[in-house]
Length: 419
RNA sequence: GGGCAGGUACCAAAGUGGCCAAAUGGGGCGGGCUGUAAACCCGCUGGGGUAACCCUUCGGAGGUUCGAAUCCUUCCCUGCCCA
Image 1 (cartoon, rainbow, N blue to C red):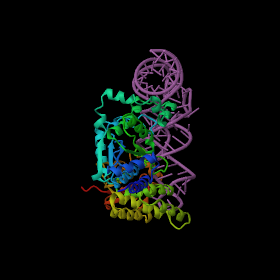
Image 2: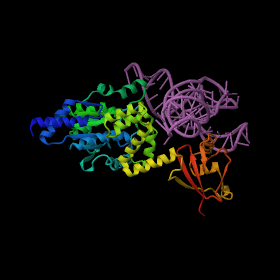
Image 3: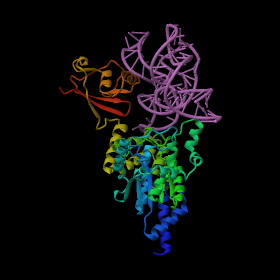
Image 4: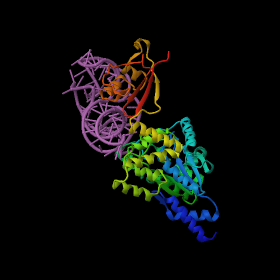
């Protein structure tokens, strides 16, 4: 292979990798390193760190995972680093308050869940899963002092999160300041060529470059990926905000959640979560503006595609059918949560139960006040009839089951006790 | 170690003796409109009660008072300034 070919292939790889990124620091460095990798037949070491806080991987994570996959497609070595040690500290990124440190057990459990989930996207054969406690856990106090001596307080405090907290009078603990240094040291330990992260990680990733240089290594190339907005379209997708879609959620849930996003968010999701070409997506926008495409159909295609990614096409078809059935044709879902009604004998009068008791005792709602509130607001439906009387008694003596609907989305099949 | 300012519901933030289950905004939930859209409009958002009303809540624990989120004591937590 001559130099010209090498340059050509490197360029091709570069373009493939650049798609969807926010920033590559530095582009020329990446190009140069791709060339070197091809020339020496040595794959690049690509690192991405994950905090073991969320037991569920959601679509937000997949933006990054998909980029990791792209590196794998090109034969590079991808290291999925579970920050089990740094998890004990808590990443201050984007935080206005100190993160609560996790326990060892929680971290282990979450780490295991990660392992089980990431291979829905990454190639298990080509993925190295590592834990940073492997090296961080055995650093001596001396090592740590030595590490901290390589950076200044001012540089650590200049980052936005800290500056903001400092200004608004929120506490910053010393261990939080140390976080970026620890993450940077991961790059040293792994001799990373590239580190991937969300845009919120930019600061940490850059510290990695500086620290690697201090340790006599060539600084890693930093690639940042956009943060995916959550279902609300405003905040970033996160478990704690509850605006997320977990990749292990049932197909129907994923489908439904995607269908509920706004049209503008839909395009964002297309861009970051599917392999559709940007050109095609832009064309759709024009078609919608011209009234030639119903955005609903496009959204259905998005929902289908995402479900198919994680559950296969058959499940995606099923989810789509079920969705149409329940929400377009207003029919009952095929599967509903079944609840066997069981009330204390004293309250059971010939298998006739008060609606409030029914809701509370079957734990569908958490208090009697809430049950009343729901009924008064017209949010409770029994066998297709809106319940407007909070004293309604539900008869199970001749009819063995009832269909209960709460709001628009929650369905229950209530069954009489079998005894 | 000293001085000052704070800690209010899911979050932010008013309230500084009774009119406070606690303004307002956000979030959430329900209804309307719709494409389960989004946006928008209306309502609800501690618990018990059909209701009158009662019970629990304003960092923790005590106290003053007929009555405390509000006053006092003490403890815990946070920020700022000084050392």
